Length: 379
Image (cartoon, rainbow, N blue to C red; front, side, top):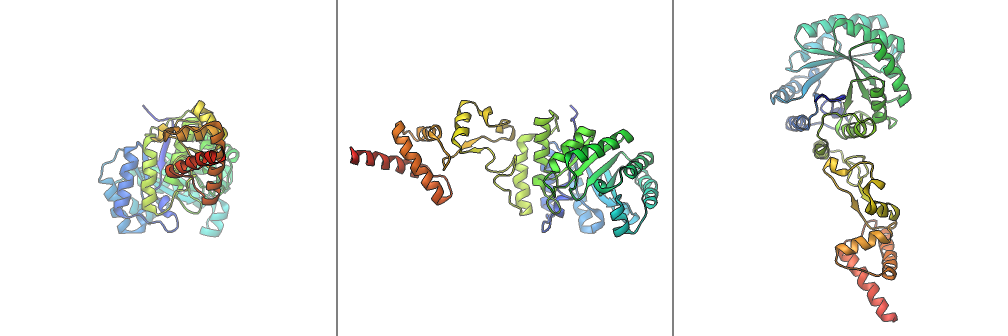
């Protein structure tokens, strides 16, 4: 069954461009294999123009004969394309700036120069037997009319896709929708959204692009990427599923395992409250929440954590109520009375405030014994 939209994961390209991150060849092959086994249909796996070592790793990944289509990244220049065509991949992505700011201050080139590059470079790649994606760098700061001209030229040249890059994460979902929907009305080829997270909107902008007609989404595991990173794979997959009812064709039970794999390889720790894959995102303490969860998990969980191979957990702390305390003690085979629970809660709150963590089973038993002893002494 075909997916409703296509993930093109760029953990091994843009994700590795995170400052200080460098994967070994074995790590890149392992991550690629894990993504493919999870059902990720496309992945961008490197930048051939970086040199022989990078090309060798790309060739190693390709030699695994994964189910995913493989893409490499290049600038739209002859030297980069030469290097890319040495790699046994399915798609060559060629990028060039499209905003006046970058054209003038970075390349000192004109809009006409941009348009003149597309047909010859796309033609060369097609003649070599690979599909082509044309990357529009800094698209979010480009003139929309010129952006459409670039997309039209890419389509005329035979490219299968254009990539809309919000290179500096400048857009909000409303601006994303307006620009991508204009592109969608202009061309019939695939449109891929490449969102950066500088303002914390990468996932939201990716969803907005989908609503506007984008067919593909660039993601990275754990949101790795330059500066604040890219749209996280796990967030995009789960948000598309639960907000838009769109299926990425990816085994969601694999997302946490892949997240931990990339965490180890990148050396970038996952925050406990990181959405979807953080250790605490299905952990509940508040008395009102725990009471609601006990009655029906859907009261305070928008989706079943089992979709990720996880389960919810209730902890005792400053905000715990009697229902959580009774449930915790029942697991220990202890059944305090209502007055005893009130005294135990006081001790739990003091413990959590002082130690910044939940009490363990031994400590809970001690609280219970203290309360019982105090009652005997005062009776």
